[in-house]
Length: 573
Figure (cartoon, rainbow, N blue to C red):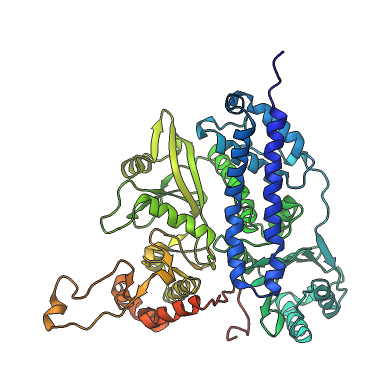
């Protein structure tokens, strides 16, 4: 009698690997509080990168373990994998992180099999979770001020204390009560039905800690975020009280590093965030708390649903065509798809592998709110009818090794997705004088904040930056980025002879990492008025010593403060 196919054993091995991943993910995440209290800022950056890399490392371990434990002809019999999926569903039904477990299973399947074999029978293209979820444990604390806001705030910060004492709790409480009264209508603060609901765990990211929740009455609600800072040698400072939905949305932006937070029931916490930030897609919310692979799953499901339920067709993205990447988009879906061209402009001294390394680097560094997060995909398949003919023709012309037509299907072998933004150069063309001033001021701040986080954009042309729906300027073209400390900032040497200035070639040697900030003005701005304005706003960016000073601070171990919110009355600190 033949031995039964080991579907249950394979499913158990896959889930055991998930448990191991979740354990190590939890260890890194749970250390966030101690790192914040000890002001170990560089360790925070290392932990963030380690947690991102953990997923792929653990997937590789499980794929290797499966290949060791099961004979190849058994393990690689894809026709039997619907049995593994069924066994796996039974195992995860009782879990509180079941939706993450589905994504994990998909990653293992893709690690074993070609993407040509992906199907909903073998893996979780569509989730099986919503219909199976039961009651979940409460993860929030609720406060009822009953007209006594100061007493309620005192109770909140007693409940959410740290090992490090508050620097000035009475002063912070008075300031926060004032902000609360300023931010909300008068009647709300007097309403006996007013409630404050906070997530039970503190969120940590970079040099900050955050309470996240909502303020609500029977009629209305407002999001609520309260950030903490650790002022070394002084204690914990309660920095602000934020109730504006746009400001809270920016805190959870796709341009920032992922939060560290203990989330016993991920789906319930994401549902809580979705209620206070209805404009955010759940893919972005999962990604914001470190579950970026599940965010990728939710993004893909949203994409295939959009394609199936609309007449939307892919077009080339507006803006100047890239010299390294080609970019297309769906008008009704707020995303761009970026492919590496087969041939680069002669002025670009990079190759395909270097570009891939640069884009992957962005995933693990501190994006300080100034670089768009990306998701990397392989073997996307789309119906050919979903492409405008001009778009498909251009993709086939510039990236034939990546885009192929197979019958009625377009195969995209490799791409990145990013949030769609308005290219800064196009934004400025249609902007008012006040908008130009604001955008150029933020453009300079974006460059400075990236530099202070040890990122040099390389190609700082306006077309490589975008403007978000909140008016923030964000960098999104990564083929020339490097660590700031790798660049060699120089002044242009004085000419040896008058003829030097007229020569077609420079009279001085230029190394591969040399950067001459004096050359930035005409390079960045064709418009003379914009050039003058930017010089007034951020003229120090044209000075090599400014950049060298930042390099020195980074090499000395300084981790800068970059606040993802407006600090009313505190910006000079």
